[in-house]
Image 1 (cartoon, rainbow, N blue to C red):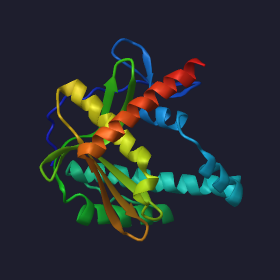
Image 2 (image 1 turned 120 degrees about the vertical axis):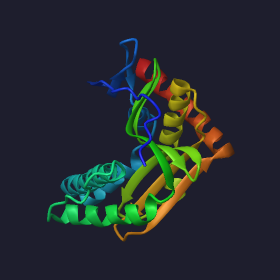
Image 3 (image 1 turned 30 degrees about the vertical axis):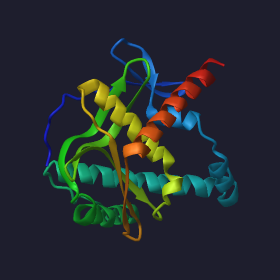
Image 4 (image 1 turned 90 degrees about the vertical axis):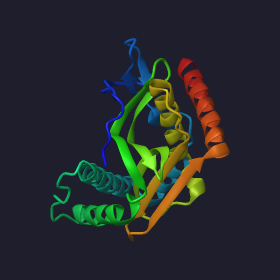
Amino acid sequence: MIENKYDYPDLERVDLDRGRHYIDSTGTPVPSVTTILSGTSTKTGIEQWKRRVGEKEAERVVKESTDIGSAVHESIEEYLHGNKWDTFSDSRTDHIAKSITKKFISDGLEAIDEAWGLEVGLILDGLYAGTADCVGLVRGVPSIIDFKTAKKIKRREWIEDYFLQGCAYANAHNVMFDTNIKQVVILMIDRDLIFKEFTVKGHEFDSFTNKWKQKIIAFNKNSKS
């Protein structure tokens, strides 16, 4: 499954007032993709949710979701590397993560023909950097692949940032390695073990790429003001 076609760099992270950054090849810190997205989006919905459920409950929910997501990601990586992946504890979160991972293995990963890299470091000097879950072939098409867990499957219009992030990684990969990746595939499984695949390609990929470029411009403008 793993086909090491490219020499991906190790990213050096630095945390600045403006958020997470990485050091590019010139020694300059550039913002992460998630930092740019966070710095150019409204958080009205999140703040309303926190006020509704309370700060303590919000922190609990976020931590639980993060723990489950991290455990699933680690297990998927081990599985794709051909290693033992079923090393979960008896905790509630690990029980949920184990069930979701099994569903990924049975349904979500079958479309991946080759994985060129996992947790892939990608960087564009002077612009941005980040880590993609997976790069490889999905049904024969070069793709940026993202593994997502959710309490409930999200509607397509709610996950625009996932698509923007994928397009950012695709464009960075194309510049770094002279590839022509123009497809983003989001593989999502919720706690009811429902699987959903979201794909961005063609004109939609170009549209999200243009929107991503506007996000970079807006972030840099806000940083200088």
